[in-house]
Image (cartoon, rainbow, N blue to C red; front, side, top):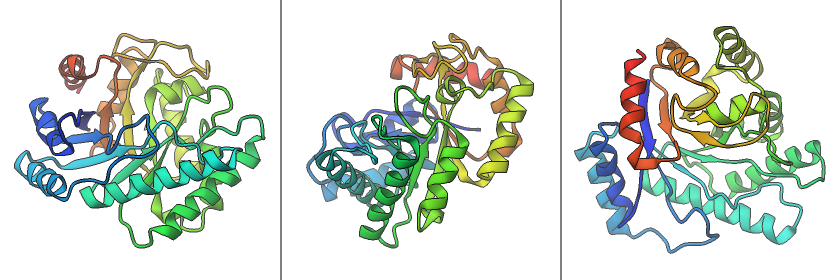
Length: 278
């Protein structure tokens, strides 16, 4: 697999490629703006140019961003929905400037308005963003969630429903998070469960839609619907799921991004462990 990690942009977005190179990886994920704020200053053109230069200099083969955690594309409150659509529009604009291939985002929480209601609202919100930004190549990439509370996107069928209701589904992709999937009830820790999970994914969505993987172990049980990341091999997934993923030739060119809780301090150990599984 094309191993990578979520790296820091401290001091400027142009520092991210070098931070990735320091870890010995060629795939990076970044926050293109503060992930806990609605708005941010536009990217400095000089910083964008330096980012492109650093990507080339450090031979970064893949780069994506993760959208703000505040985004809720099915927010019942009209003001929060507008802010969410505006924020994700801005994220996609930044990704296009930086030539990032994907913008990973959590679809949203229906807050007791109902699953079907929420999925329809998410689809309409995505349509609005696509309408505002025609012709963009960066893809909005829906991350499978653990399904905590009223969060949507925790089943392949829910993701397929969004695809079906979006007007331009070819501008979408899926991010498979190992922690989230296990917590959502997909038993990727066993060989039988792993094979069934991706058989179902292929039948429902098609494996060509799986374009980003997040590598995280989990502190919570199978089907717990609780999102708690852990370091690779330290959680309930153990090494079984990661050994299967690392050896799965179907995913050899897909970026696999670490988001483990220790961050930069834990990445070298996680990367070494993952490489030892091949």
